[in-house]
Amino acid sequence: MNKTLRCLRYLMATTAFVLVCAASLAAQGGSLRGELVLPSGRALNENTRISLQTSRGVKAIVFTDNQGRFQFLGLTPGQYQLVIEGDKIRFETTSVNVEVFPGAPSLLNVVLKERKSSTESKGGGNSVSASELDPAIPAKAKKEFERATAASNEGKPEEAIEHLRQAIAIYPRYLMAHNDLGAQLLGEGKLDEAATELRRALEIDPKAFNPHLNLGIVLVQQQNFSEAATILQVAVSLNSGAPAARLYNGMALQGLDQLEPAKREFEAAHELGGTTFAVAFFHLGQIFMSNGERQKAVAAFERYLHEDPHGINVPEAKSILATLR
Image (cartoon, rainbow, N blue to C red; front, side):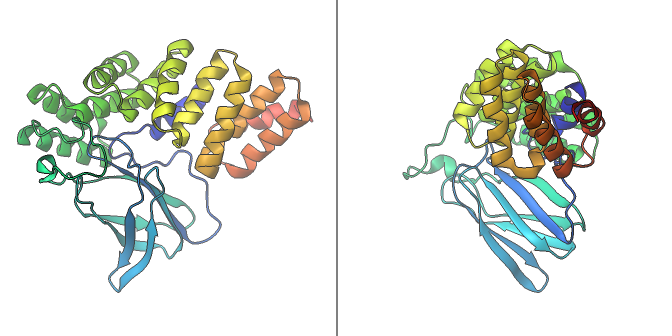
């Protein structure tokens, strides 16, 4: 399990992580998959129009699902621009440059830009929490947060951590900064520090999805499965369509030897996330083995190897299969 966790730590819901660990190789061409994230760090829970553009104009248009996810398939490798259409309440139209590579999907999260007039809007529509539209965040704190995001994208976690600490020093109730600092510390293996920051984020907004997910991941890595299950079940209740939440909830339940509910969570994770969450079949194989269901275990491990032939658990899966066949 530890190898899986080290790889899957990149699934944590930070503001600007590009997800690469669990990506499966595509046979031909390229693809682009991603998720839209509100300024608070929460996934967008509504349908939003996204256009994929080249220098010659619009290539394709899609709408996100109700969890903010989107994908473009069958793309010619090269440079593209994503244009996310803004709404009238929370976020502005956002443009992001992205490169599509041959043979593997490009995976990314896009942080939407807060609409400056949104805090003044009295119009109806969607319910927005105070943490999402916190007008008290000072400009200097936001600047430090932006620097942290840039450093994270450049693969400089220590620099990102320092900028996030600066942002929090300027504004201690900066929800996104606490969440992202916790996620960065998690990525560096500093689990106790990560848990502290994520708990602070939840004190600011007890209904924030991302801190629940990230804290759950920390607790699973610490093998504190009981508290992890409690935290991750809240995450699932906040966003039942998030495959990472379902996957880690399954891990927590598996650690508690609650195999049937764990099995349901792993199945849900793969159904929601597809081959990116092929590792769910590795855990299902372990559950079937525990239940004495030999043939189902073989099928699950074979499915994992087929969907993720370069996965971190491939050597262990092959070794188990050799004993089962």
